[in-house]
Amino acid sequence: MEVLLSREDLKRENLQNNMTSNTEEINIQTKYTEEMINITSSVADAVKKSGVKEGICCVFIPHTTAAVTINENADPDVPPDILKGIKSLKLEENTYRHMEGNSPAHIKSSLTGSSQLIIIDRGKLLLGTWQGIFFCEFDGPRKRKVYIKATGD
Image (cartoon, rainbow, N blue to C red; front, side):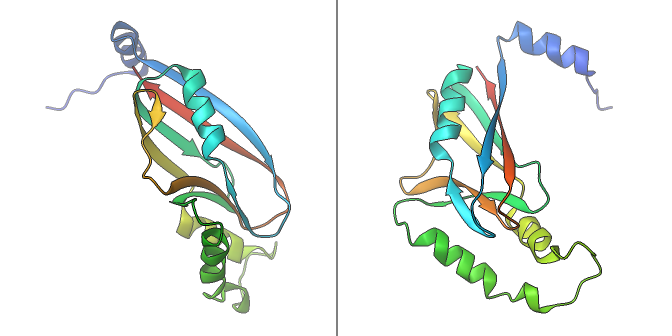
């Protein structure tokens, strides 16, 4: 038989294990209909502020026409190439039932994803040498939010 813990039991257990959890919100004002914004340093700052040394960082985008991805941040040509590749799907050429007219942005967001998990090791994001975290705008310009949750010891 599987034993499920209540939310109160989990909180009590986490406190006994000295687990730390912190949520930060960052605000982004996008400038273009579609763009990718490197948010790696903002996420790293939130992790540092959290005090978590070993754990997991969740980056969550609470919007249906924006997303988050991890990809190369060394070559500035990669984000425009990614957007060009997504545009080659020609989603704008289809007809949709959604009356707001931004169905392609919803589809792009769904394909890219609304969250990413990154390991926290010795207080730092455990990303590959060339990796960065990118906020992806598909229906801008808009004011957007990003939630960063660091949990661990």
